[in-house]
Length: 244
Image 1 (cartoon, helix red, strand yellow):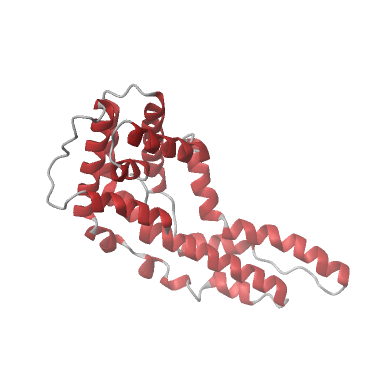
Image 2 (tube, rainbow, N blue to C red):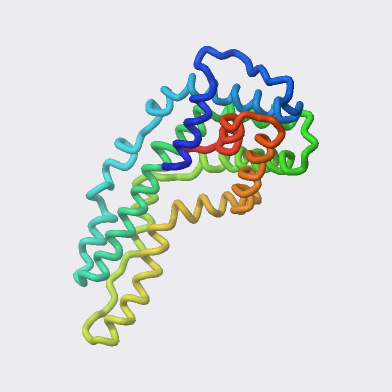
């Protein structure tokens, strides 16, 4: 993913043995503080990265419902191929989102959260006066607050089986019924496949996160460079709380 490659740039610009960030004399003071916090976060994430895989648990949590169980039994009982395919695709999308959540996002939040908290605390304490940088710091704070809620999102076979209880087969004896069946089964499939993504979107809305935050962070990265900061640290700050 492009985001992952960009985040990697941060670590390439920070030596693994570095202990502190030493700003150039030409770097604006507020940018130096942000760059220092970003470099420290990069080091902390590098040091803790090995623990993420240890917390991945989809094999045990989702194993019983990957191909079997009551949820799949209900889906396979649908005789009409079009409706069955729709429900099957929705179920697979749900399982894929669950796997990403419990193998990637939640473990990274657990492992990196202390470093994230120190990062945001350092930003809040920094002598930042530029309005773009201040708004970017606020955006980072909102993301950190949302992570606390994401840790609690349930993703397991109980959730999968509960959602697939919605599955039902609609009559298709006539052409008109076939058309109505598609309209009636599609919303059920969408609720199943979008359960995790809808939940994450709701968390973002609750914390005031929107597409504007990404724009603000991109503007902040440009501002950091304009004020003398290194492009690597600017990119690192922009994607500092990325879970990819």
